[in-house]
Length: 333
Image (cartoon, rainbow, N blue to C red; front, side, top):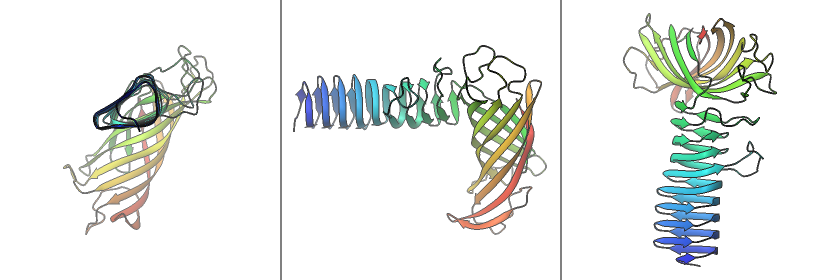
């Protein structure tokens, strides 16, 4: 067991305040305040405030405040703020078996092929998965022929492929939907951006949804995650490209019985698939959905206004549950 300051360390280093190693660590560092490695860590750092492994980190960093490496991170960072310069993986060039995971309030990486889970994620050139309230990433991560990552958030900055939809369905007379996300396989062919190999241009999109029915005086709001596919005729610019679209995904909608906010728990889980065809600058679309509704127990179980044939499916997680088929017809811009 070591305590304090070393040039290289193999084993366990424990201190009430600071651990500092000038070069390399293979093992475990635990400190009440901070752990610092001047070059590379291969092991575990536990600290009350922050961990630093300057050149690279292969292992786990856990702190109450801040974890940092200015090089490649292959492992896990857990803290309020996590920062790694590079996180490589199976989509990297060249691909590697290394994996990176950041869990925190704020996560940062200049180039990320791993997983970020937090309130705010900054992924830079992102080829991995980001899960947060807000994601930041580069719109064009690379000119290489690789697939981009999957951002999942209410808002995504660096977004590409955003669409605006207006449609009617069995819940509301009018629904407005705006999406942010990224393109999975867009190329750098000017005027086309069609993929080199795939038959469809593919987008990951996060939808913010607002619905309103003037006839029934009801409204709702929600979130959805969609895959949007546009047909490819050729990789070069061609008017037949993007003429047809197929989208599918899962939406979560909170309903309101009146124009006031309904504070009772109710959640519509809507699995949908849509087909669209381009007319000038927009696509008209038609779609079908399968809906699963969870809501609080009420004397009048039919108090929510839903224009569809409904099948009661008993209790689930202490709530009433129902299934019904749905539809939507509208336009995508």
